Length: 139
Image (tube, rainbow, N blue to C red; front, side):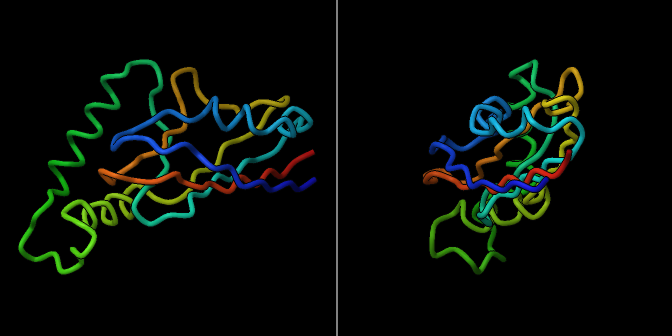
């Protein structure tokens, strides 16, 4: 069985936001899959997806702090700056983290580790709603 759905995520502030429960709530079809795979893709170049710890909120703060240090704004060598000082750094962060994640499905649920969650990584200061495409494959 194959199933695909676009999900519009609410606009969020810059940072790392857990979206696992939001995705699951929009996918009742997930419950029908005994074994399979979910591919989750974000249709944007200035936001990204990742899987990481979902228990301690300081992890999200540390991610944001580290990526801002690693990819700073207002660098003299950036040429792509028409949309603001956060624009090129947002593209670089998205390239580093990636535009998709894959999650195994077991017995109608995402088979994530005990402390794992799916993150929307919003890299823009004033972003709009983001769209993800979820493709389910399984039986």
